Length: 125
Image 1: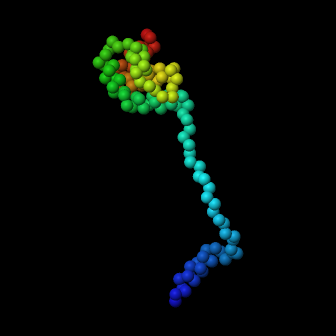
Image 2: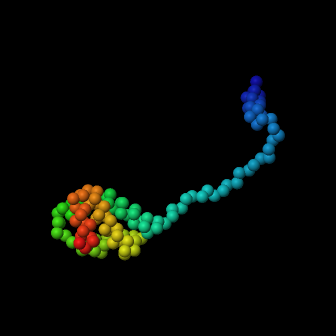
Image 3: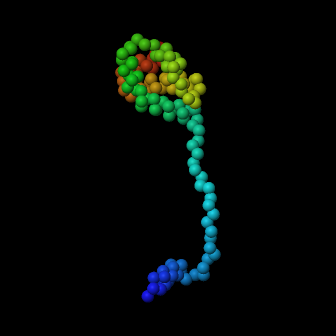
């Protein structure tokens, strides 16, 4: 009776193996699994990512400031912000583009009545 369980397991294994000749044992050798390494973002991708983040975080603040300071020169404000806050990984040209995008997209998102003013002021009109 004690041999019934091991014999049953052995018979089951033979049936599942299709009664074929035993194959040579394959030993598993550990292999290094490739972990994905983050690729560096290109400057345009970084600019898009930072723009989206800043608009999501600060668009309401931008609109509040636009409403409270209707006579502010936005280009002067951009210069002041860029002198105060660092943006990592962007050239000076991209930093200016980032500031312009944040102002334009923030206005479009939360205060569309200010959009024309923002665009005109940033374009020097």
